[in-house]
Length: 279
Image (cartoon, rainbow, N blue to C red; front, top):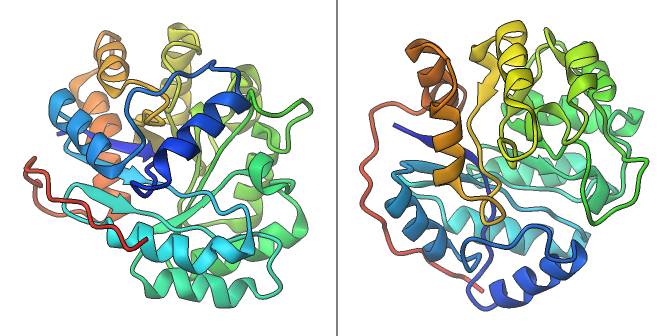
């Protein structure tokens, strides 16, 4: 079984514009591997033997909050597990988190660069605490993003600060704790309670460093992820399986950790349902 813990999809009518705009922002550094729709993701999952993907929205305006979360929730199925999002600068974050939780979404996706906040700001800590109290998983973009200049608004040291402040709940730092910040991951984040996903990873982080992080941090806190449509999950799986990991550690990373924190029971079939659209 393989669970991809980090993927993005857009409504069919918005996907071409969204993919084009995002490609332009990064000067084509990450060419997409699908059209950005739910059906495109499901086709790739079928082709690449991915059983389940976690789909993650990024809310960049308060006006998007209700509609985007409702659409994302509508995509939930045995193959797609939806997270929600809130706009961090809202005047009533508790109302918005309650709305996300009420839709049955599993967690919240945050992106400090696109949403313009410092990841361990005291106001954000209040948001995290309330969301974790509702049983939501928190997944953050971490580190470098080619659409934004340095210094970046998140770092491994800051995620370690969050782990110390929260002392519980599931918090995930994408891109192995901080894209292009993996020395700092080893120095500050390894050994904390923060989960790390492997999204957009194996073409960038040194594989010997990845193995050190897995050994020191624990394979039970590493989640396989691709960052679809910006990375090819088949290639990511191939790289992971080429590494000298034990079967137990490989299974933890590929699916067992994800099943545990998502509360997934029996194995899900690979038959792709038709995605619905409410836009």
